[in-house]
Length: 439
Image 1 (cartoon, rainbow, N blue to C red):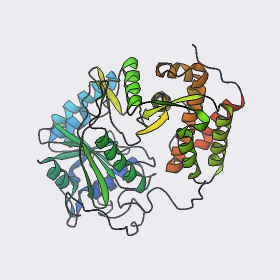
Image 2 (tube, helix red, strand yellow; image 1 turned 60 degrees about the vertical axis):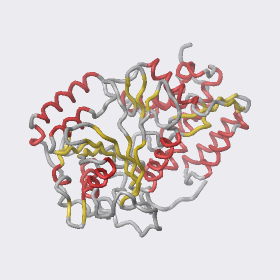
Image 3 (cartoon, rainbow, N blue to C red; image 1 turned 90 degrees about the vertical axis):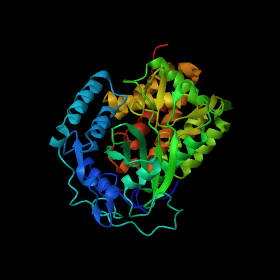
């Protein structure tokens, strides 16, 4: 394992909003100031953003004009939400279009960072190596001008703010003057988020000719470099209101697993375990990393002849980045897509995130339930009940390695400190019998 003593994920990355623990309000202020700022100050569009749902803890900044753009941004927010939430958003959107947007609190940008500065309270980033040519315009072109050039028309944007996490990044929704959605935009403004934005662009480009019957992917419009940040522009994914039915969701996950084909290997000699071990060696030194490395060795030693079916996975399939798309599943956020992992990982990841975020279970309870329910969860993927627990344990090791490499423990998120929940759940599972779910 690697000894890492340097500070957080943003250090050494592109300029912009990089401090992962900045709250939602401060994050939006810093983001909007940077995206709309030029040498002459913050543009009119940037100074005219309204906050939702509250001024103290906003998750969305919408343009005050045109009202239709603000209304559409709210209407399409949380597209995977249940019927009650969707109905509430429709009512709110109708009110905004009728003029209620003028009653919403505005962003206060007087204290926000100037373009090129770091996050709130953070020093300006060190000088970076020479970067590729920036195609969409120079540093004095604001984000609206950049996107208008790429999309060939005047655009308006809404800006999303997520909870603090290591891979946090500006996400924008782009509209025309009539409020019709044109695109989604991700901007890599830290080292980690930039790597993920570039990776997602490469994934969407490489998969554009893959024919999928159960999944709808976003189409990549353009990748660009702007103000030393990576910018990805994609078409919106069509969706129907609500979450996909369970059977539809499983079929979609099975289809993604088949991308590139499926191969079977014995656990101990599988290329997946070899690659996972290599990543484990790069994890920063610490108690959780040491325990997790031991648990991987123990897992391989206990089940060396378990056959693993290795396929592809989306890598971050959750209830909030997919939705119904007719009889299919609309699926976005492909930045973690890779091949060569145990089939069924997407189902396990979805179940864990659903338990923690939507059902509000504690992380330890969710991990224990995931191991207990591994059999039923993995049945549709052809994983035997005898092997399901091994696959679920491998998934938790995979997730632990990711979170440790990303330094998620520094963000204060519910799953960030793997030593507090993931490592104990694995230890308990591997030291004693696990009560499996019903057959």
